[in-house]
Amino acid sequence: MSFFDPESQLSQDVSVADPAIATLLRRELERQAGTLEMIASENFTGIAVLQAVGSVLTNKYAEGLPHKRYYGGCEVVDEVEDLAIARATQVFGCDHVNVQPHSGSTANEAAYSVLVQPGDRVMGMSLAHGGHLTHGLKVNFSGRMYEFHGYGVSPETHRLDMDDIRRQAHEVKPKLIVAGASAYPRTLDFPAFRDIADEVGARLMVDMAHVAGLVAGGVHPSPVGIAHVVTSTMHKTLGGPRSGFIMCDEEFATGIDRAVFPGLQGGPLMHVIAGKAIAFGQCLTPEFRERQQRTVDNCAALAEVLVANGIDLVTGGTDNHLVLVDLSKTPLTGKDGEERLERAGITVNKNGVPFDERPPTVTSGVRIGTAALTTRGMGPDDLREVAAIIAEALTPATADADLDALRARSGALGARFPLYPQLINETTPV
Ligand code: DSN
Image (cartoon, rainbow, N blue to C red):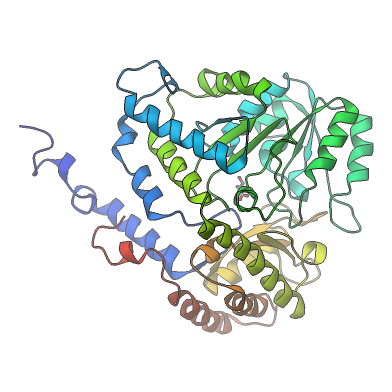
């Protein structure tokens, strides 16, 4: 018998083959559709990307680069990767792109291995001030392998002060400066970072993961052509499948390709690369650009109403897709804020604020982003309503029963913007 006979387990729908997982898939779909997703690093990818990521390309080994593989049968996936490369090059105008990194962390690891040697000095934004764990956190591979010196925001403005960073760079004399952030609500000045790098003889790497969609949509300045190497994830504002990619000047192209494979990874995830090709293709449309502009407009509307309701924001507002709420002058912690908002039907993450005195498991802040709700179709008026709900939820006097009422309000708003209706209405869960 063939193991693909209709009755065999390999032919069964997931609801029959594995009801436990099927139920969890369905529950997660309903959770995403039934709450307001505002984690600043999350988004909803399109149906076509979901289909690619769930496709037969998952079966294929393709170690190597297109047309130079270590396996046979790669003629189809070669075309898939060629399309991903061509479209990424068109979107960002880069010299060279490697679309194989499984994640943003792997992309950063590969980039460091080309730009610096173990033990070299590197400057990166400290996690406590809005950076990322792969930008030198002591317990991360980056902090263990390289001598990272963290730069932070000004104690007065909570913004990056390029003069301070310049002074620190002259003192530290790093081989590499890393620009990029996970919880910084303001525009990053890439040309100023490059000037500083040039002054001290360092290279510049930009990790643009958070703002990649804004860059592709023309609503945040691009680091491409300014930084020597640019790394990114696909799945934040860019809205593609969970994964990473690296762009670089021609001089680093071979080094980056070799660092990814065989340096760090074996076989690329060709199903995910197909998803990347689709997502890059979608970046080229007017619809995508409009969505990125609206993500930023929505965040400005959110910030305005939060501030008007007495909520403190780090730097007082935002230029991009996220705000960082500072609860340190209230009796609430970041953890309280995350829990209250969850009860009100809004998913966010607790996040340290600059100079936070609380540990990372508690924090004094909440990071809130607008990319996912924008993808659902919301506009500035909807985000004003969301901001009013958030402000009430983060008012210490608001009681649990009031949070339940807020959940009904956020649920009613979400119901006007159905998420994946074609999946919700199917009996199969994904
Ligand atoms: N963990 C991601 C974020 O939430 O920003 C960054 O990789």
